[in-house]
Image (cartoon, rainbow, N blue to C red):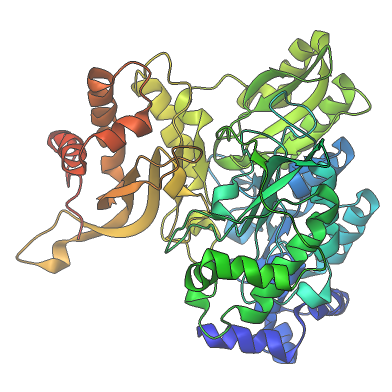
Length: 568
């Protein structure tokens, strides 16, 4: 499908119309072939606005994406999500049934880096029933995908953490409500990603979103007011860019209008003719930050003041563990979900445990590192919560590699995935925790694996990042037919967000997958010997020349056939 064809599909019928169409397809029991015969090939693009992607390699099934603004779910909502996965996210026998996946079996769900929930194996006829069940508890899949405002990110510990200047969750909810099913802003040049937080640790990753709002303070008439500073034009994938600061101060009550004005600017000025360069980060880069700000101001009904005092102190994308809440005697518990995948039954059990051991304010929160939190647990109930069956595989005290392991959907279900990711990330994280003796002060190693260059697992901001490739192994210079094509990956080191933000360097390309763990063992041996006091792994990777890092990794060649860095 050409890039311009997608835009044509969006113009010939408003994408939100597909919601009612899908209900008709389900009622009539239409097959995929019959849907395409009736509505044309563009329907598969428009169905993304309903939160549905076709499976990459299993025709006739969908991935369904459920939104959780700010990652916030009530226990009732979380229980429904788990129960829906258990009932509907099930593979048919021809695709393995309950044995389809050797690690997770069947009826699982995936927590994403955008605080969504994804389920697989969804059939057309089941969608209206799922939506009806969702409506009862206030859940939605609408605009979980597509060229519109996506799920709005936030700090998963909003309203709980001592690092917070104010609770931004009500603002997140207001922005999400404004854009969801808003026909005027539901057909943008490309996806539109926003993040809003009142936390000083920027848990919601403002630096890599189209719009990132972070806490600030400004004086008016002798009084101090809290609000937001704005960053725009961040993003990953091809052409990654850190977001740029605008010279604006945004009161909480003006946040919806600010986000609308940015969307209006993107809608009017964004390039719809080339999908490869029509993301908002390219627009900010092309216009320049000052011109972009002027364009936003000219489209807003609010005259935004200039910046005040910035209250962001760093970046902390991890809430794993047992933590004190602001509220006396209460804890929140961050559970570690390696690669974000968990059984539907287990997630429902976690929700029921939240109700059992929590208070009336207890919630389940999804985090951008694919983990989840249970909040408002009285201190005396924490031990019982951790003893529940669901918690056995998701304990809040994992090894450093398990704690930082993030994986995208990969080739198992994604149209673009080149390599398998979910199973590999879980196996590798557990194996690395056993094989590598990390320094005592290294509590997390952020290892992110994307199955292609699309960066859904955010590899550019990780200590160790991978993106999928196919690789020639056992290369025979005399006979290409004897070369093996195996799964491999580009190998990056040294990424981080926060005050020392920097995208990682792709130190080596086309590394056979079998070579990676031995290479990491060599790297961490060298790190342990050479690091200075308090030096984090990503800091060491930045300090050491890439040629040195490559030579360290290649010391594993003696133990692995095919070697590191000899892919073609």
